[in-house]
Length: 388
Image (cartoon, rainbow, N blue to C red; front, side, top):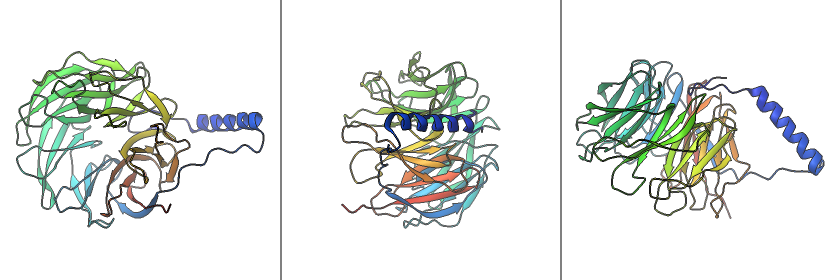
């Protein structure tokens, strides 16, 4: 089966591996062997919402600044985005579908003008551009700006790369490149430098990784011949040094930032096409990272989100599993390790490519929205408090 990352997974290989693992366990431990119990189910399905055709990416944000979290779905197959304005109780107003240039597959939330409303950048793989939509009291304005890019834009990474107080954009391209676009403050951009990434980078993040006050970029770069997380250290003027490589040959797909060990530094977490694994690399604060820590992410882990999905204070991970027709919640232990097995939730229709989190019903707990690319729906899972 193919997915938006262009990789093929074999369900027969997964089946054979599962059968072999079961046989080995029986031989080693006898028929009474039992796998560990997964963590409690802290989420329950509350709402199912139809969206455009082929949802591939979700973001959650309060675009109209009414105090309630909204959702936007990027729908690649009918070239739309669907805006769902939250009511604050886990339900949403009627869908607002907005036509986009061909094949939107990823989005990023930022601020591109001088108002107080969050804005949205959306790529267009089919028309070699990205679009900026401005937030407003009605959610997102229909009027928007377009910026041309190189061939087949993939990821959009937003930050102020030249330290002028205006948000800029880094856009990765299918043919192993990254382009920098310098923001002008009104949703338009000027072309900047172009960099070789070595492999296709579907996803990226930005932060000051070495503590010099300048924004850097980390890319999840993978191809059939080479893969790594590429670290581009910023010069503060919209240009970047030659990239460093970590997590070589781990085939990273999606990447995110979070301070996973509460040391004040942003760490890297990334899904992988290698062995259904996820990986985490702790930041040293000097632009380098500790060796990656592997943990299980489910069947075909792709996009994921980081939040607190149980009753402790540790950040957990919820990952969309493209091959397993589910999403998995990976809970942390107090020592920072990850609990296995994961708690899995089956998504109606399968082909789960997109996931995001927010507090959708205003109870102070982090909830999840997940999309079925096959059935063209978004499912809302609310978190419940567990009795102790």
